[in-house]
Length: 221
Image (cartoon, rainbow, N blue to C red; front, side, top):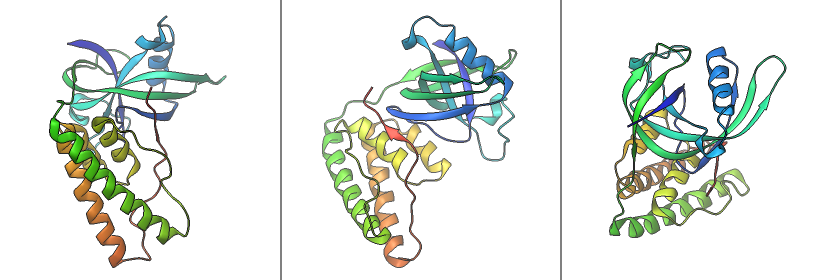
């Protein structure tokens, strides 16, 4: 187990995905200041956990957040005169929160880091899912009258699953379910089925595109 600050967020972040965040609440300003005081950039890490439906963003009790989240690294920070920050983080690894501590200025947790089991089936499922995504991207581009969801995808099955999960428009519960999937194969299979459902929806309702371009980007670092 390891102890890390926790940042409840009304979103699910995935390993390998870089995401900008605007920090305005005082408790999370304190979190960023604590991270910036860490000498080594690689060690400027905290956990992002999605807020459960029915809870407000400002509430950070243990019952309000999911137990599986993502360990992220602070990679960039811009401070403003009024104390706010614009930061960028990149997901490093999935985590499971074992214990919460809300006694300090922000939520902390004892966490275990999770890994995707390396499966022989993952490579084959990655090829199938990527092929489905290319059809999905082509169909959506034709619908929109121009290229969308452009950019190369990673070849590693685990990171491919994370990149696709962050690119496609999904509900928070869908994203959380993908994050909680124990293997890349399971996650890719879930994604492939979702992509086929989205394509069927677009064919049925061509005037109502099923997705928007996600405002996140995959990074191999």
